[in-house]
Image (tube, rainbow, N blue to C red; front, side, top):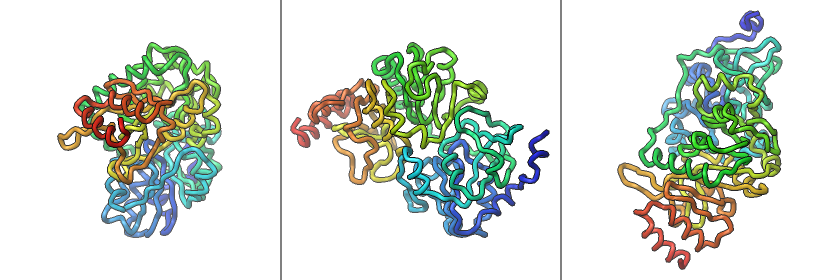
Length: 437
């Protein structure tokens, strides 16, 4: 029986579903690729009818903070994107600094929610709906939601893990309109990022990853492409928050087997996939080798420290000469968020045989002017994402700096050696003043 016939009493127009949101409500919307765009557009159209709706929308591709919506909607996010970064910096929303590793704490801190709306597949014959390739923290939000709305997109795949919701939990169903889809605005990859990605990926794959390691790969320009460079490895495992592109190919090739994992052996585990092609998603559909779990599970430090040979590979915006890492702020302004980076770096440091790796291009170019991303000190107001005591290696296109177990002076030498050559003399002068190098 067609799901629209079987569950017709749950079907609502987007406008009627948006009408369930009242002034003063706290609502949760599916993150990133699970964003319910059809519902969001219908709710945005009610900007003159509602007031003070608190919108929790993390890693959002949807622009909520607009000049004409300030009285209607107040955005809260724990990870800014190009869609909301400027608005958060201008005070048109709130930034929530949380880490993804304590489920009960997160529920208590951000819940309950009056309305939760996520994107799902149609219900199956047993009444279960899948969240496709993007579970994220939706399960955590659903557990503390009062009114549950599912925006049904028949293109979504099904996976194993806890990537589902049952119709017994659902208040209303809305049909997804693909015409409302919004892609995350992504700035073009610069020449230095393209070069750094190739060199850094090769260095990490050949020098820092060993056969039988279990990997966490962070989301970012450089690390997200790492899968391309892992083809010569053997029996790797994946225990991560975001499963990047290329991992499905490595599973099919027998490079990623998970055979030697301590946690979920034989499984590729994450909370969501990055943006992957439809063809790749079809290979994940009902494939028992892949499991998606809420990131309060995937990022649970108590579980991760049980994994031996656990390698956390993450991005950075800047690294100072002592090894402190920021992946969140630039010049005191929020740029993104910690996600699970802090947790995974700590877990890798505790893991027997583990390694915490930070990857970044040595320079960034702003308005035609190059700036070193290895800096003497982080500027005032900079948030430390990974403390220096939980960093083993820093990798740029100029080499690998081994900072774990090193003194401050030794760290300075290592990090200057992987900085861009044009900035090394300046960094050395500053290191001499700061640390008597």
